Image (cartoon, rainbow, N blue to C red):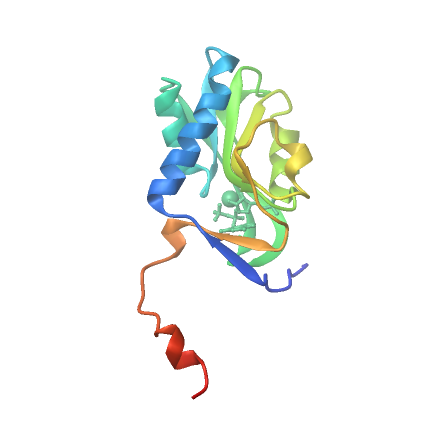
Amino acid sequence: MQSASPAPRYYAVSWDQLHRDSKALAWRLVGLGKLKGVVAITRGGLIPAAIVARELECRLIETVSVVTYDEEVRGAPQVVKPPSAASDGEGWLLVDDLVDTGTTAKVVRALLPKAHFATVYAKPAGRPLVDTFVTEVSQDTWILFPWDTEAQFIPPIARSTGP
Ligand SMILES: O=P(O)(O)OC[C@H]1O[C@H](OP(=O)(O)OP(=O)(O)O)[C@H](O)[C@@H]1O
Ligand SMILES: Nc1nc2[nH]cnc2c(=O)[nH]1
Ligand SMILES: [Mg+2]
């Protein structure tokens, strides 16, 4: 089991921003034409996939579940639910929230080699595995999604500096 060292910076994404970025992804994908369906990589890909499917007027959603991380610690990827309806992926759109090291992407691409693979966010190491994405962030950035966070009180800046 490999473990990632803690990331030094965070990039927090709000629901509103995720909606806008997922719609921007749909704009980039509209030229693909009619899809057989969308395969969401659960869990993170579920909400972007729903937004993209709505914009592309696609009603058929399949899922593939790959467990790669426990919070910020990366382990060996495990396929806990294969995408049984999508055959080799031809005519299907694969959607995930992000690609980081590309570990999850490699596993899913092997299952659906002919699918078009799209993510909302991409880090440099995983970027070559994605056909379409919207926003690149640096490799040492950890993206915080709205489902992983909540608003909390932060002390005023003056209290953290000396007298
Ligand atoms: O490119 P990688 O290094 O493989 O990282 C990207 C994957 O990691 C996260 O999923 P995670 O395994 O945390 O599961 P989750 O989607 O269920 O939260 C994210 O949703 C991607 O699927
Ligand atoms: N939430 C979240 N999950 C990840 N899995 C791999 N990289 C990331 C990341 O930057 N943010
Ligand atoms: Mg995921």
